[in-house]
Image 1: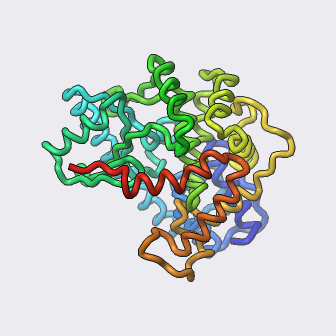
Image 2: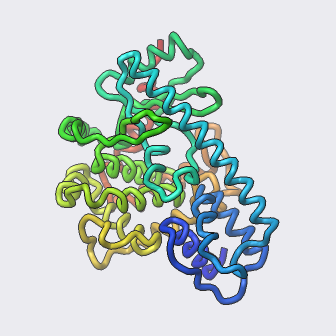
Image 3: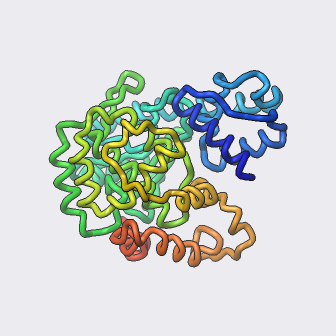
Length: 366
């Protein structure tokens, strides 16, 4: 995609994300232009957000009718999938509670509730985390009631429930560094009474407190940046979350949390990208970032890698290995280590150690 079309893509993304603005466009886009935009929207799982910009466009700026119909059909598919996910979330939350298990909804549909049109956020699966020993309680519940699950790397397990992919996570936050484990435990205890609720099918589903939701969403972004990359949807999540909860949080406390967990320097980059490229109002950014913060390199990398690095055209012709999930993995991992070591050294160093541990030693087994 050339730079002019990329600029139009980001204009559409901002309009759809915030529900305001006008598209600055000279000549009308061709059908091939729109096909390219749709391809990149799919690569970054922001098809719904781009679609939500259409009501704000002038008639001559819209995609051809045939493409709009295909896009509308895709939106219907996304809406149906999200509705099914919500059914499963309400059912599972109630079921877990009946068995004395205290789940917390991570990311996904919990973050979707902060969007203008929640049902248009693309969500791949349901992520549960648990208080105290809830993870093992839930695992034992599955063994007796839904035994077709698998323990996976990353201190997690996954399975399908009524056709929906579900994951359970031992760790509430995606930090790899063991140096912050004790601090995170204290944070969870301190914010336990400030947990949020989102109503799904009449069931009040528990979410983390706003400060911890931000920490959870943002460290998830960094985790994937350090490995194979991540798409724009997760940055949109962060932007919508900041916008929605900024009035509820103590900005200086949040800054201290980022500092104590070793990611403050990277967070400055994140904040500038959210403001400059995604249109997050400056008033929703909790504390100022340095004026010389450079984010173009990070945006370019996110743009190229796409959703979890699966659509990175730079490596389409690279050799694949049975030992890695992506083509040319060693080189990609080394390059990202060098990029992010400067901004989050603890996480960059801990990644290969904890990933190896979780893959070969840290899995549960019966």
